[in-house]
Image (cartoon, rainbow, N blue to C red; front, side, top):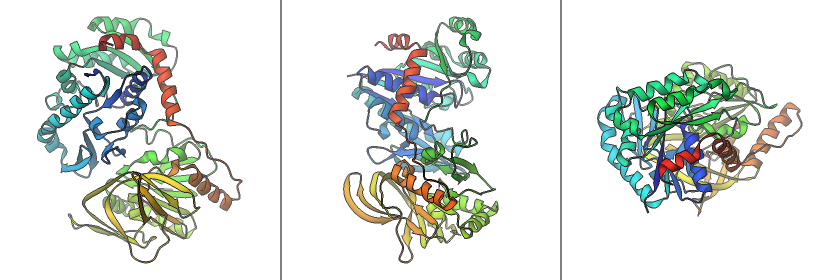
Length: 481
């Protein structure tokens, strides 16, 4: 079996490539094809745990769900996680190296290309269709010689390419013309068409100019995808939604410089008044989220005066919660074995954390949380070993890890402070509902249910619109389907 391929590239970052690739994955699954997503290299602090127990980008994880496939590190062999002075390289799900941006760009990435291409070829052999996502723009002429994620991938397997243009930004025609003009002849031959994304208004106002531009380059105008409100987690949407008040519980999430896995809070943001803030913390619930640079972000809290404000909030009885790196920060001491860095945390929780080279990735954790007694499910991605310094009331009793029966205590509850390594915690309806209603009770407000949604339904709704507005028949014909 050799899969048919299609590659989604964009005229810039943030044009919506990930969601277009996701819609294509769901479309081909609907047609009965065994489908897989692929992205050679992704840069993100939002990650998930693959079926192998490795770390992969959130976008390919969701695309795999859309494709009906088990999320695998083969779908995202290279993941870059930005950190102070450079990036951590996650290769095939595991920590591989720490590099500066220049070192990676000039040497490391080319050496990793063969690993990436091998993963892609394996997926091609195992599937009927592989939907490939690019990164940024293929027309960055200063970087093209070092490209391992856009046209170099397309050329290696002769994949047809569609270009996505964000029309909401303005200058849409210039985006597509500029991109095509900067591609070389071999690259232009791979482009089969382009589409406008995130359109608001009357498409007739575009007149016939989209087709004129397409004709100029011998490609197809594939259609205009309207801008949709949806609940599908996106890697680049962290601060795009927090300003609109949605509920009666005020939740402040500290906007750490190296914040990670901010999609932990999607359930909260669709139900309550959620803000990402750097100061002026005044929420009924204050959350310190996960971070890629725990000690550095703890020092940042102190420099910005946020540390003192959280101390004050705790004295006032505000509920304080730490997730992953935030949990570590709420403890007493944080120590990094490799660098020798040491920093005193809030001391709210009787724990200390020691960082070493080992990174913990757990696909599925199941247990019972100790605050309301509800069953919870989530996952872990973190560095650092956290140990109890005295008897504590654990946040949860974990009884299953990746389907295997394992029992241990996790996290801490003390007074009005909660700390846990559980990512995805708020997707557990009973826990979230109880937590928010306990805060309402303190405010003298009546209890309310938490509104949940189905990721599958959201993927289907987005794909329905995509199939209606984009010329999928033309794409299939060019793929040889």
